[in-house]
Length: 163
Length: 447
Image (cartoon, rainbow over all chains, first blue to last red; front, top):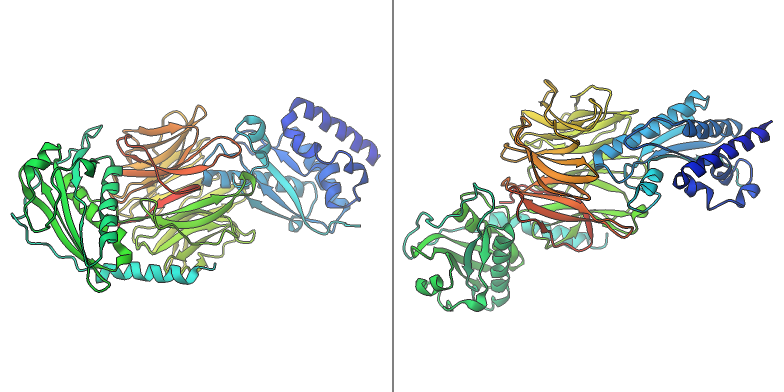
């Protein structure tokens, strides 16, 4: 059952990638093969098989249906591996002013964190931080990069399996 | 940092010269006079005043500081856009005595309107510097002064003389004896190392204030000029800090449950205003630095940030997206009467009140461009000074005539650089500092 659901989600994610190629390139390109070999409950398992990040529209912090799907998968995984703690990093693209982007990225981190909590993950397991436009993931001067930088990334801070 | 010791001693020396400086008015050869050759800076484009700066005479082996001081004066005045220093190669008269009347006819012949003469003596390790400013047309002395200082402070003496000349010719206080604190940026865009740096206003004497291990943003000067407040991510715990520039001692401004950011001092230096994040909202708070009492000034479920006091401390301008997009607001210093003042097309942010109280400078986004502009505190009289791919974060020179900001360049290897522009929108200049820099903050006058 679990496997089936994951397959559906993977297909949905793949379709979403076709629709918005740039938005998914970051997570789908590096570890396509490693996905099958990732140790369940490891950081790699989380990043590759679950998806560690969600993306936002310009100057927005609303969670899209795709973002909600990713966060639901994250919540399921976090409930399965109850020792894992995470930090949600909020980020903004470079097309905003510094102070506002800090607050905007905090808003995005809060939206993702609150969604995880609503899905049943204990609030004490999720911290958050706002990076504003200080740590872009993609480095070009075009929407295809900016859309990858408007993100909330769930980073494992402890409790993941290593073997 | 390995050079902490020398840095501190430099600062002590700089601080002490204000006291050690003997500033004497020199008895004029023809008596002090009102400038008849004045620069009219009330209009739009300014016709720069041709000024001849005669190479300062040197005695006691002071050739190097004499040349430094002449160069600094010419550079400061030229960069201001209000003066056009004349190439010394074209001078007909070579000044050989500070006490002798210049031959004004020869200075008129090269179209000089003003003439600066000076001399520098090294008197056993101390510099004695004298200068005179002449109105070439009337052959009258407009200003004269004598300084004594350590040879290390030759550049500062040059800035102080340039300030006196600027004031004599424009009627406005100069801004050359000032510093700028900013964030120096190194490394690739996704792993930028950011360091707090202080320098003289003209890009010289660049010294680091932090070691690059923590991400630092938005430094701002205290009115006393020896303290800054800024945001640091620390070890994953973003907070507002204070730093004493002389000792480089720093402290967290307060332990709050969430991130604090976008700090700025009150004009009396006794308070810091900043944003505190609470979930998806940011509101503006005032912290009394003596009592450490925190007072909430805005309480709106929105992003309220980038606060800046009016120079009399009675009002605060800030940005808020409470109406849907970033706009500029003004409120009483106690949080009363929060009114929106920006109503043009686009998003308005980073408001900064001018030191003379007459304008608020801002960043404006629209149509894929980022502009720097000014408007009056009631929102009227908006003017865009510069516009392009990305201009952000204005800061005022203490005389309210020049705005410094940063301009980001496109491309993976692009990065921000510091620029300045006259309040008229003319005289856009890159600040000559190497590498990438952002978030400039101009100090008040040092003397």
